[in-house]
Image (cartoon, rainbow, N blue to C red; front, top):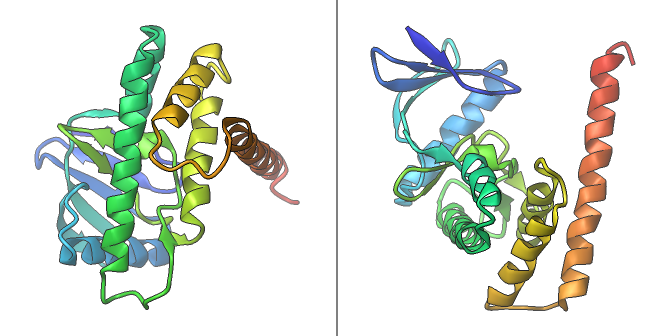
Length: 217
């Protein structure tokens, strides 16, 4: 028996008998890349992720340890129902620390050239589990990019989770900003940059929707 997990690109399910997550990739290139990222993270001692238990290169399958916690999106939705601003801010600060440790692990790897700046790529809160600590999932989108902008994109996505752009969410951002150690912009400028990311995200969603509706285009 198995339990399916949400995934746009791949088939991901929990093998209940083996108590492990099976990730079957639709593209072999994505399989090879994510397998490499697991190798990179393991060699640098980064443990805030599932363990890679086994692999099947022929079928393009990774077998991962099962994390039993809640996704960060699930937690954020609960906190909003409870109007718990503080808990959401703490969670986002912990997530920022996760990113900083993740980036350091990539920078310390001998499998990447020095000077390359790799980002997580898919900053959807569904891609993070809280199981005693924050742990990341889905590393196939790791790519070179701007790490500061990646964090702001994550906050833009936070605003867009339903219900979108609520007073509660903006209060969370204000409280989060006040607790940041480094502030290179005013709150208004910082928020404006996040809103600019929202515009980009919505444009990408619109193009994707058009492609799905009219695949011949």
